[in-house]
Image 1 (tube, rainbow, N blue to C red):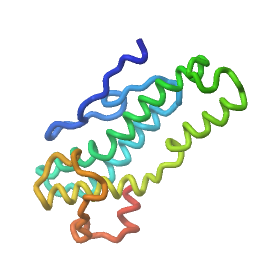
Image 2: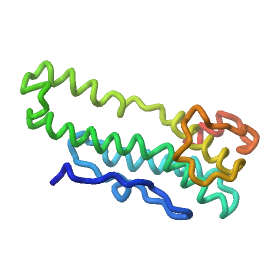
Image 3: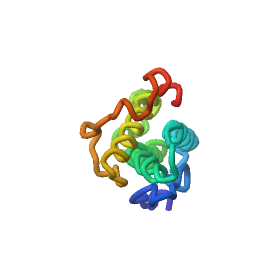
Image 4: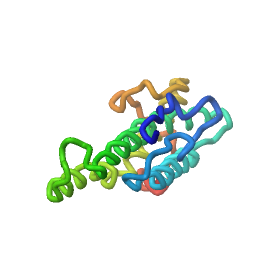
Length: 164
């Protein structure tokens, strides 16, 4: 039952966004669910620092979806995998304590070591590009395709990092 959750195809629709468990409910086996909700709030707060008009809201939500969905859904998938690791049904650790610690540390490192400032910058880049180009669905854009308009934010990099 815990492993039959289907991922949301998107986290926003126009001026509506879902975050936290509403967007990416996960099993408790990595202890990362609440942290994901906090990261969601951080990215949204960074974006809303630069929302100047009501018409910017869909762009902010689209940028949020574009940067958060992949990471949060990976947390959901790997938490499900961790359930098998705990039950020694993973086919790798098979109950061996030394192997378990090594696998666990490698499995959690990408969750623990995220650069949240960079994550916010990516969202701000997608938000800016969306407004400049009039693209409200940023989820199809790849990170290296983002055009950052430094002038839009009208702030220094240090101030933008403060938003995160």
